[in-house]
Image (cartoon, rainbow, N blue to C red):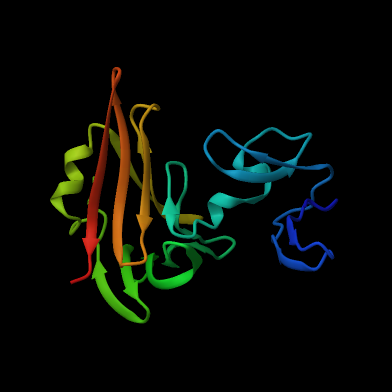
Length: 201
């Protein structure tokens, strides 16, 4: 349910609250809206739909999946850290052992963790990609755009698509595999890909 001050609540039949969303700003007349991007947001009904007007947005809490428009990394103003954490199993969405996160020490880079054990590092951003990312990911640059932003307010990695008909998502699965799942349309033909970025030995 959505409260009058713009907080989302998950309750049971007796109105016991199991979860509530934090709110970054006061909202006069809140509405909850699922955008075409897949972002579920709470905003003031009188304000335009832009990220600065959102009291809360699901893109700030990505769980195990990154889709175009989401940011993997830090909001340095609020201290929000957006990372990907695997599910415990394919049917249990509670946090699992594996995490993909952006590390700010030195040159920012992606780190892949198994609990407290560092399994892999991406190396710093080269301007086109991370320096140690597997070459197989580079074969799809005609369909995807990779972005890395590093300024006083934010440090994050994100992906985009060249053709809006392309559907893609990056997933950290319960087995410790980070994979990109793509559905690319070439005219009337659809081609599905599964590209594994990193797998623990």
